[in-house]
Length: 429
Image (tube, rainbow, N blue to C red; front, top):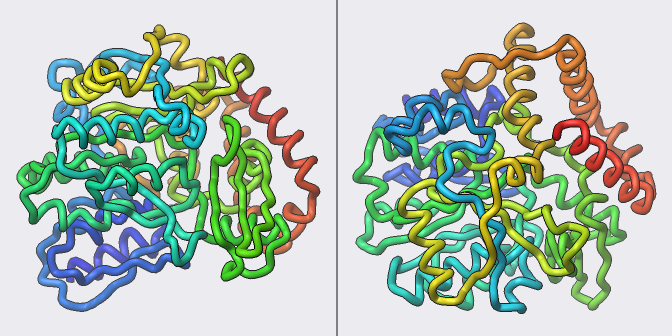
């Protein structure tokens, strides 16, 4: 059966992106989700409709075909740009200071959602919040309530199946805007190419810049590192709390609050990154209508957060123009070079490093995704660099290594990770 193929060829081979598209596009509700493991669960009732396999971006994503679909006539420009095809690149933030201060960066996505709902451009939005019953778990939220939208602010650095509610969108008559990570955008565009009628109710796809996702175990680990023993004691978890760029902050039911800086928490990426992320070649959500990431340009100059926003399609540009016109967001345009340098380290990691890792894994017989793209040229030094990264991440899966890493004081993690990031950016600009 098709459902067996999905699990044997994708999930069991380590190719699952954790996007939730297989769940969301299953019309018979025969695929569930294990929030503890962060993986789909096989159920019964499959009738071999093949929608789950067609939507899955884990094994194959034809980048060339998607460029032809999303950017007809601009395929070459999209291929050559490190940021993907773009119409305009801007530095923006919300004009509502409360939204801006509580956001991961500039609060642009929250303001866009509110503007789209208030203007009637869409009937609802699909965003990611935290489960009020289990505040350490992420929860997809399909809503038309502005208060719900405000509760979905901030990034969630955890493998999450935001696409699981898609069938409710597909079978209804209401229109929606949604946020999605690069792999999740791939799933949506794959289905748009094969079954365009299934996406007729999705009017805007807002892509999120993404370096990597963590296994659900990472959240439990950081909670323990901050001194909280039981997940049941947690009242609230925020991944980007406080002054930008923020901190992972955990609040217990007794009111006690502890945190670690965003940069300091990056050591978790060496221990808990979803394996499929190491072979993902898309950092900026290149196939979305518009893409949003941290606007690091003013990192040392502004206490308020900024977002870098790339508009790619007519729908994306119209959404930004509407929010600017209605006074929901503010900012200015920047040039391509400035936009690329802000995330040079992640662009280097994805647009070159991922392909090298794919080639290295194929030599060792490890299943890898196919993007229908040539392997970029690289030096012997770079080849060895990726081998070292692979070695460290394999060590990171071992319990003794994780125990040792967690034993290092938070202050050391924060200093070390900050220096690594700055050196990495300097070397890749």
